[in-house]
Image 1 (tube, rainbow, N blue to C red):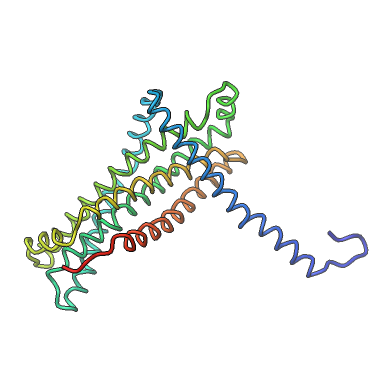
Image 2: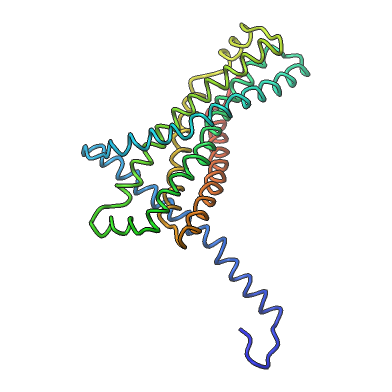
Length: 282
């Protein structure tokens, strides 16, 4: 602060800016991650308890799952085709350079299942489903509907977050399976008809290298990724402030934060899987 008759100090301005930056970014980021972790633990706790006590809101779950599937299914299918074809092109070129063209099917198929399918499904859910969840809950928060639920003794976590979390995990697994099938089929067709590959070689090499553990890892990724998208979207929606402009800012923050967390989590899962279950040579 500058008093009358005193010139502003550059050092003081820099200090104030540094403190303000720390409050706006690193500290705010830690607080956001902490609130999302707490919300996630509460949602999982109530999800398990409500299922055990037969109090799970099945109607809301079905409605949310149908909405998420209808929102994300078509974009996911449209993205899965070029992803499968692109991976097949790249791995076919690499296999041709090292003289192992017969392994192109195994390489592209495993890339789709291990990395492409869960990431594509999660990214489409973050952009389509996550933004819709955040906009819905953000609008309710701005209209004070969430506060009204709490006043009436109804937990917003149990009423709003739990069914969306469960629906997101189910739809995430379904979308991942869809991407696996479409991506592998697109790579197979492109290799067979456009690259003049042998259909039997494509399938046999994939069957030789793929394991059940790869599919289990993919399904675990799908569940965790979908849970991350749902929790981030719900947290941003329930903490929305500032009217309609605040809803738009929350939606934007939901997509960015979800994609960042998905990429970090994918690296952790992939590295842990390689360390815990190393592959042996054939």
